[in-house]
Length: 378
Image (cartoon, rainbow, N blue to C red; front, side):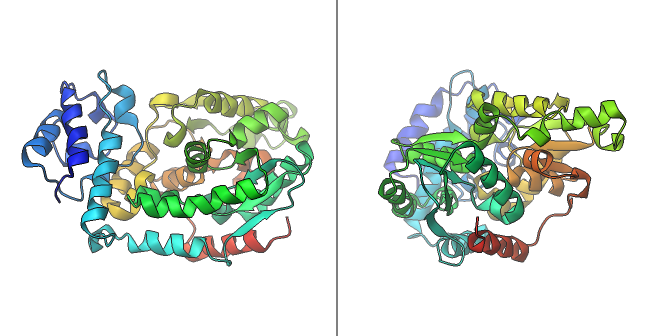
C-alpha cells in the first residue's frame, strides 16, 4: 500500500523516536514487524509504502504513546494507515483481514431487529449500555437500568451500537454518517447527559457529541452509591461466616485501555469494589499504563493470532482466582486467555458470582441476547 501525502507528514513528525523501545515492552504487535519503532518509522519514510497487515495489527490501545518519553503517537499513525488502506481499496479491504464479519455486525446492529430509538425518556439523561453488555446479559442490563431509574427519575434508555467498529476499520466517513444519526437522536430528544455502560461507547460519544455530558456507569454508581443490598455484601459474608467460600476468592483488577487516561473512572471502580467489601490486587500494568485485553482495534478479527497471543499474556499476568474488570470485551478476552474473569456488574447485581458461566458465548447466543434486550419492556 502507498502512504498518502497526509500520512507521510505524520511519519516525518514521528521520526523524533529515540529508539528506546519502551513501547515494545507492552505492545502486542511491534515485534512482529520490527526490532525497534525507530527502524520501522525510517523504513516507512524511505519506502513510502506499507504492509496493510501492519496497521490492522495495532490494537489502538495507546500504551505506546503513554510510555513514550518523546510522545511518539503510533496509535494515530496506524489509524491513518488504516484509512489509507480503505481509500486505496475503495473500502473493499483485503479478504484475509476478515472484515466482512465487522461489516455484517454493523449492518445488523442498525436494523430494527437489534436497535431502537430512545425510550422511556422523562428527563435529560439517557442510559447507553452498549451492544457488548447487551450481548452478554439482557437481564443484567435490565437490573442496571432499573437501578438508574431509581436514582435518576425519568432516565431514558438508548439501545443502539455506537458504531466504533466501523471507525476502527478506518472507514471514517462511513462512521461519521452512522454517528450523525445517533447524535441527531440525542438532539431530537434534548438529551444532555449520557450514562455509558461500555468504555468504547464512553470514548466514542465523548469524542463525537461535544454538547453531551458523558459519564461512565462506574462514576455514576460511585456517586449515587451501590445498591443497598450490595453494600459490603462480601465483607459481611466473610465476617458472619456465611458462604465464606465466596469471599475467600482472590481478585485482581484489569483496567480497559479505552479509558486509560480517565483517572476518575479508575478511582470510581476501585471505590465501588471497596464498597462491595472486596479487596483486590493491582496488576503490574494498570490504570494509565494498563495493557489491552487483546480485543482492541478489532485485531481479534483482523489478526487473530496476535490477539490470541496477547490475551494469553494478559490473562496470565495475575496471581489470583479471578480477573475482575469493567468491560465485557475484556471479560471475554481474559477467559479466552485461560483465566476466570468477572464483570464488576456480576458482583453488584447477581446473588452468586460462582454461578457465572466462565465459557465464552457463541456468536448466535450474543445476537439472541441483543434481540432479547431490544424487545424487553425495560
